[in-house]
Structures are given as C-alpha cells and as structure tokens.
Length: 382
Picture 1 (cartoon, helix red, strand yellow):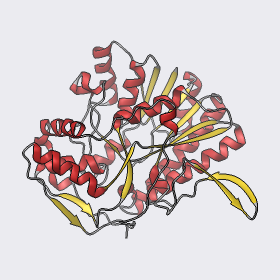
Picture 2 (picture 1 turned 60 degrees about the vertical axis):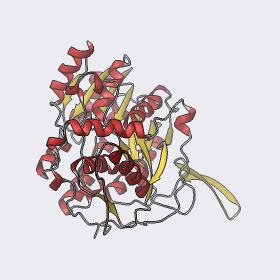
Picture 3 (picture 1 turned 45 degrees about the vertical axis):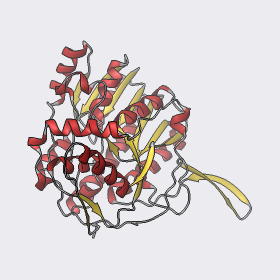
Picture 4 (picture 1 turned 90 degrees about the horizontal axis):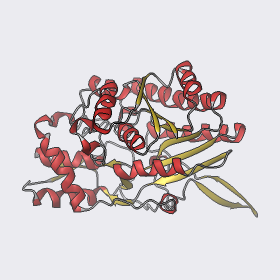
C-alpha cells in the first residue's frame, strides 16, 4: 500500500515507518521536528539522539535495501499537506503528528496554546486534505486512553449503548480528559466523527495507553536506527522513566499513593496494532475505535516490577512517594475493554521480567548520557 506516516521522526513514528517499509509498503515519512525542538528548548533530550530523518532513511536503505521517502514539513501548513496527498495519493495515513505530552500541555499558557493549535489544526488539515485529494484513503489516528478519565463503570471500546426514557441509541463513550493535551484528543475524535458523518470518510481512532520499550525488529538491525527514548517528566512515559531512574540510582518517583491504574502497551504491539488497523480498514462513513492496550497496572505495580528486576541486576532500587502534581484520583475503578485488536489478530507482548531485563540492558549501554536533573521538572496541574 501507499502509506503516509505523519510525525515519522517520533518515538513511534520512525519504528512504524521502518516496519511498514519492511512489510513491502511504499512509505512517505513526514515530520517538522517539533518534538526535537521542544526537547532542546526545555533541556529534556532523549537518552540517545537519533540522526535526522533524511540520514535515518539513508541508513535504512544501506541496512535493508529498502527506501523511505522523507518530506520535511508542517502538518499545520495545509498547502504542504494537500500537495503531498495529491501527488502521492495515499491509501492509508498514520497520524502521529501531534504534541504528545500531557505535562507539556500543562506547563504554561504558551505550551497549552501550542498544543491546541498544533493538534487540532493538524487533524483538521488531514481531514480536509483527504477529502479534497484522496477521499477513499483510510485515516488512522493515534488517540489516547487518557480521554476516558477514570469513570466508575467499564470503559467500552469507543462507543456505548444508552437506554434513556424507554429509547436506545449509540454514542461515543463519555470522555473526561485528564490533561489539556487529552482534551485536544477528545476534540480530535469529535472533529473526525463530524467529517465521517458529513463526508463519508473512513477513520480508525486508536485510543492508546502509555507505551514502553525501546527495541523493535527493525531498530535492532543497526543501533543507528534506534528510536528516541525520553526519560523525563515532560516527554517520557512512566515505565521508561522508572528504568532510567533505577539505572541512575535515583528513587522511582511515584505520584501520591500510586494506585493510579492505566492500560499499557509495548512499542512492538503499538506498531502491530497500527498495521492490523491498516490491513483491515473500516467501511466508508465509519469511525472505528479500538482501545489500544494489552494489560493494566497501577503505578505501584509497575514500580514493584522495576524494583525486582533492578535488584536482580545489582541495583539498590528505592521508591519515593512524592506529592502528586496532577489533578487525578489516586485510587479508583478501572476496567477498559480491549478486545477489538485481539480479534484482528494481535498476540500481545506482555510485560515480563525478560522484557524489563532487555530495557535495562539498553539503558545501561547509554547510562553515561543520563542527566538526573532532567527527570523531574516540577510541572503542576494547578
């Protein structure tokens, strides 16, 4: 298939581009280096800094013999995006091109405004550029489980049947975002649902939990093909951060009581889920939603796993409960449904001790680059 990957320089974007290229797809990788720029600006760069996207594509060509076409441009520039879609006529678009950090969106007014402008304008441009240039193209947008919050009922897979005063209807599951970033992701879904109903677009919205992991089959072909790996409070995810803290001899920082429960997913499974969605497109005029997680843990449970494996590797890992900077429930009911992607063929890569040992091994190879002062920045929700 002809596939455009928006946000292809990112943690998920580059491994996805290589995986799809290896699978025989014709891939165009698009990015404007926003995340790299924000990381430099706030002194929270990745544990290892990959080459730029053009150089990555050259290395991939040398290693695999396969080509990835690189375009440097901003998805908020409608003319750039429309020209690309008209020229390439994609059959699928993977939309990762958003400011992805909840803490960044809560940093200050400027960060919140950037998040709003970038995320919503990029998504609107994608919808319009598809409608005007390749209306049968399948849009696969990366959402987030954070849109649901922590309701006291089971979280259905995107939709819910409601009976009210003797009548029944089907609605998007109620959303109650846990940050301003997550609020923009709710608005993404609502915007695409409008365009699906109005124009008959076909859209898959993947509501993903926090991702962990470093390696994929493609990144392990050559260390220069590795993806970004943030371990800071702003752009790092919790399990990745815990592993770095353990290696650096810094106590694992748990916000509040640590009973916050979320659905997690390995980076390998993220790529497989996007591939399964692409291989099994929805009908025209359908917004299909999958909850993209493979298992759930409390923060305390994650910390216990890291402590166990870290001590097996000789680290005196400690845990520190700190005042919760976020506005969230620290103990709550949490039971999301996540059967759709399994029904399409996903066999999950679960969080075993072996997986954690592999993460530790990679972090250890780059331990001289760990900057402990990058881990916590004191960002508060209020």
